[in-house]
Amino acid sequence: MTPIIDELPVFALVAAVLVIAVVAAERDPASAPVCPAGPLEGGITHIIDGDTIIVDDRVRLRLEGIAAPELHEPGGQASREVLAMIAVHTPLRCSLTGAASHERCVGSCADDQGRDLGWLLVSAGAALDCPAYSGGRYAQAERAASMAGLPLVGQYLRPPYCY
Image (cartoon, rainbow, N blue to C red; front, side, top):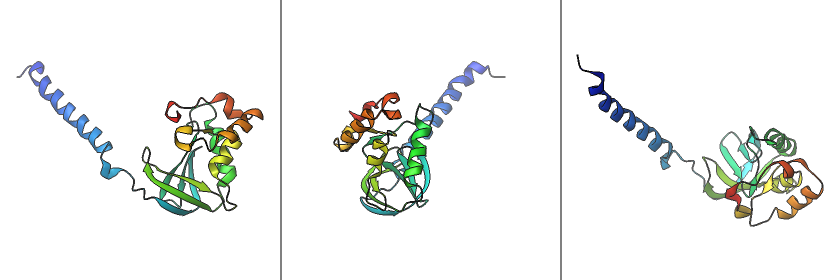
């Protein structure tokens, strides 16, 4: 009978190889979404959170230039609900940048009246401007929401990636 100590290095090596394989599979560029730049039209079929939607059951889209809390963070559920009230039954016209972020295509969307969803969310206090990606295009909407005392502006801290 072989002592367990003799088998431990082999077990550790096998475990390390499996961990590396799993991490490599998760980071495999082939598994990243294909996000061509250009127009996308359709409706919201799922709302993930305040800045992520699924359009026509096929494109997972991260709204460019805004930051909304995750569902488990303060204001997360409210942000998602505001997005649902604004756009759930509205045809959208989106413009994809060609970039991907956390397995989501990045782009901006407007409703059937031409209103930018990011602007509507920030104006409603359901998201913050993310100047590193918006170029400050939602800063005025955020100031107005803050002056109006709308909820999210006071309880959600702008994430570091927005600077």
